[in-house]
Length: 311
Image (cartoon, rainbow, N blue to C red; front, side, top):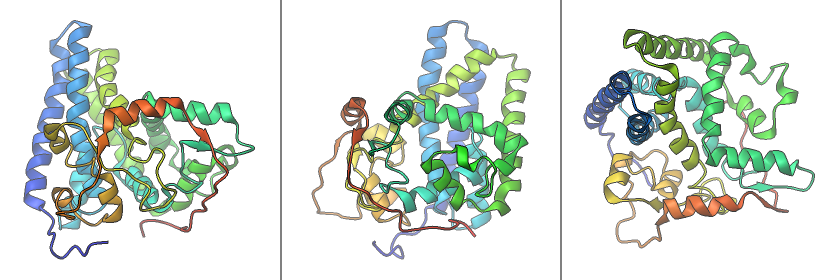
């Protein structure tokens, strides 16, 4: 891991970008009230997907305390941006930091299954990731976060009904943040309910636009890890799309570099190994390769980490 003293957090730049992102997201959602045709809704969904994936990349910076050096400002922008995901920042933050602990272990290897696994369920989960259903599950979990957050506990009575990845997630959650999670989930309902009510928007069309992000985000969630080495840090890929899109998405496709250096801001990722040649496959090509489904494996890799990811 590269030492991060030479790589100061670009706090002012990140705030400016975040404000632009929030302005665009609100404009796109309000735009739902101004169009009638489903073709227009489709293009709004594409726009929301592109902008919100950029915003998610900024949320990702906040998850690593890299959005701003002031912790309160960092978290405040993370919370507000995550409302447009929509998901509680203090929940997805713990989920993501836990991902850095579990990556490619048996607790989090969605592209493989083992002897004794329910193959149908494993394939449905994997294809669910590819088609946006992973995001849908997070969206629906807002009801749990808002009205029954106790379910998000390692001591939950429902634990036996969850699968291995879900139980691994619950083990890392710090219960002291349940109040934050609940308030943020309630804020999600208030924000989006208010927007639909104030601008008299169709619920179906509104959700279709937000799903533009949900599909893109979910489809890309495992593309950077598919078929990679079963190693918590090295099990990732540097991918590419187009230069402009990669920049709009805040270099998120330099994913292996991020996993090797999770304390380095997005702005430095393309340059931290200057002079070193690395292959970068096309992200879209890699995505379509994933459609061959989860593959059977006999290689077991145990998660070497346990406990809460945030104190």
